[in-house]
Amino acid sequence: MVRKPVVSTISKGGYLQGNVNRRLPSLGNKEPPGQEKVQLKRKVTLLRGISIIIGTIIGAGIFISPKGVLQNTGSVGMSLTIWTVCGVLSLFGALSYAELGTSIKKSGGHYTYILEVFGPLPAFVRVWVELLIIRPAATAVISLAFGRYILEPFFIQCEIPELAIKLITAVGITVVMVLNSMSVSWSARIQIFLTFCKLTAILIIIVPGVMQLIKGQTQNFKDAFSGRDSSIMRLPLAFYYGMYAYAGWFYLNFVTEEVENPEKTIPLAICISMAIVTIGYVLTNVAYFTTINAEELLLSNAVAVTFSERLLGNFSLAVPIFVALSCFGSMNGGVFAVSRLFYVASREGHLPEILSMIHVRKHTPLPAVIVLHPLTMIMLFSGDLDSLLNFLSFARWLFIGLAVAGLIYLRYKCPDMHRPFKVPLFIPALFSFTCLFMVALSLYSDPFSTGIGFIITLTGVPAYYLFIIWDKKPKWFRIMSERITRTLQIILEVVPEEDKL
Image (cartoon, rainbow, N blue to C red; front, top):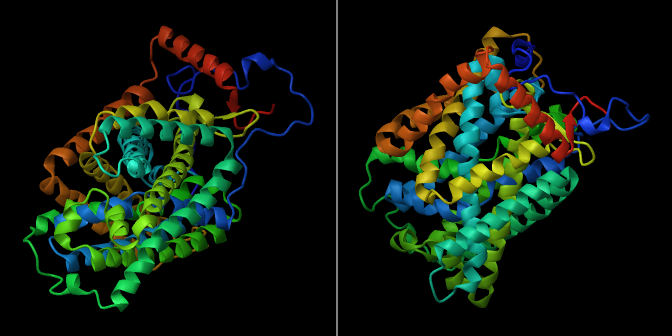
């Protein structure tokens, strides 16, 4: 489906697309002959694609979400049911995104699909809320878990100071941003290594858990569906915790233009990754309950550490390190993928032009990476973990549900569209309905957090008309915008993609 780029409808010299020189001002107008074109390369192979998906999904979720799922379901049996259902739903969503990614071969994920199907206004609102809420909050949540787990071996006998957690977390966030700014290849290689680390962490939990089952440690599974009463209205919150742990299956679609042979690589990487993650998550939760009962799990702030201390003895000190590496891999994969969303949104005219520029030597979308740093720091030092999870979940699943609903719309509007990978229609229908239903129900379950998320999402509408539609901005504003962009080009050494060195 071809559409006219949004940038062509925006007047020159406006807020987003100023009359900026298309190359570094310091380079002049001459182009050295024989230089390589500045663009993002197709460096994401099948293995790297799998590492992006698994490496981003398996972060802190499986180590912190079991408590939230159990708290909002009330029983071990219902908790395991939610974990299984969330895995199946995530697979349905991932298969739907495989069709979208092979049909619309553009990077940007949710944003691109909403733009192609529903037009520029919903797409702008999507990237607006991603920039203000979803990505800073998601990065802050996973980073806080990284900070807590990496400090765990140093504070065995006492509580870890919150300030220490946030300071080490800030260092971790900065390292991830620098890594993604310096090299695409090194970021991908480290992601592969960290993916093996986090699979090792999962196996360290699963294998002793299976041995416990063989020994007959099944007392916590008796009367699995009996426990403290929990209202059905709290199930959306349990669903959010579960889906948060599985979140990440959509990130490969954010970098479609950098995937080798996307028509085959994207579906294959998604199917392999989701099979590994779903089986691993369910078995990990079963393993937890072979050693920890429901009441003890609810009292634990670090379920994986509590589990390992009981079964692994001195080796339990290694578990927090593996979990911290797992969280770091999720941080790295998330920043790598979402920076491409901002890059594409800028290319379409929905974010300042500087974010669609690439470093002249490193070939990384440097401005799109570092724009996340200050916003994540603000979120890190201003929110708590539980509120952040509920805060970001509303906006995230609302737009993912809309994007998958767009697949159904495309089936009817563009029946002849080339679809190398096609899923049965009930899969996107069930997934999008579940997402939108849970989002609506969450407004009742947690009106404060989801209400704030809803209000901030709505602010994207006036922002769209102010920054995108209104093209009669004052002359001083246009001049200032142009000068800022020129200055940033020189400082960051970036140029638009189509330019040459």
